[in-house]
Image 1: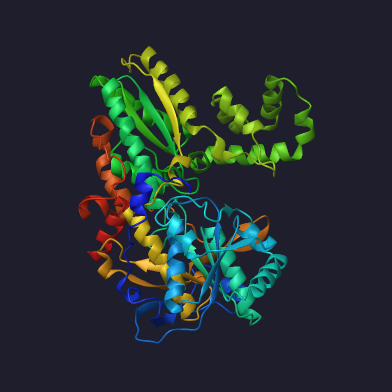
Image 2: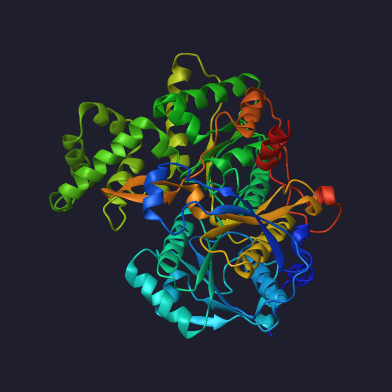
Length: 554
């Protein structure tokens, strides 16, 4: 028998909370709202999804209905890991069993690829029970293959029909749920009786809107990062000799950096969306950081903590132009570039192809970053932005700027930096009580959507800042969240990413307090996630969600 930790043994007994409509089982009454539209480009979305577009939003209420026929359901995990995925699967399992004890659940292995290749296992009670309230996606694995071609759809149909599967649940982010919607449209338009339901997953927090309060995993990941940041803050305040530059996950949006700032109150936290809105240059960002460091030095505090979102580089207008130009140059002249054996010659070749403006930006970067921009490319020839060590880039540039300031008598302190990247540490953590409850409810809601006959919907659980007795469950048509974006020269339907709103309550709260946090040592030390004890310690919600919901109630 595989050994498990004492904590996992205790957590396996935890029974997640459910919205009232689901506590009597997955047999519910669906109350439909008005016909829906799209997040943008409604006419185009309607044309692309004629069978699904305009479906109503659904809210569940308790029902006294009798048991339903047995159903065979399949589930896939798609994309990167996020805490709570196993509880979504457990919720689906318990939900379909409440519909009919003879219902079966299958898991396709390694994400969409397993669905295409027909690699699966039946998920029985012993497997489900072993993974309740645990982190990771190791029950069935995940993958990044996209379900988007007719060949994929036909393979999915064939493999589902062979197992007599009448519903597929896709647990994933915005791209994965977009693909789920495409698959649902394919089946529905051809009257193929296979339902497709989505569940909102991503630690980045950028899959949310008026109908989806948050994506699962965001709460736990931010608590893990905030614990680590708090530890670093304590160390900084103890040693009093280092500035810590911490990069956090979040390439497309800065939700994680903002949430962790709200939880720990560091001296500096950059929000990429603000950088883009203010059209800040890399030099301006460095200047702002250097000024804060100098201000703290004048108080005798030669230490501090700075949070940096992973995707910052792509939000700086001049860097975005530089990356686009490098992608173009190194795609068109790849063979010529490969001829250079000497690094200096390679960089000179790149400079000779850049405009005067972009050459200046390129030359302002540390040599190591210049090399990363030119040498580290993905299979398509593009710069691997997520691998750029932005934390080290800023630390080096700030160091250089402070030395310039010291020569002008504008900085009289000491500066020594440490760099960190907190990323994978948070993706597979054991879920917080919030994520354990929320994920289980999402899975149960997906089962209810299956039981009530819906397809092309995303499971929705709302009002989660309140006690579970006030939570509501239902479904939202995925087409309602979509707009059209131009990708690779074609119009593509996609779920609109939720960026940090500069007029939103969380960012406004941050702006109101950041000047004080910058110069004061005003750190908060959240400590590790608590699973046992008073509700006010264990059943927390993110600061982001708390502030957003407070504003809605006013």
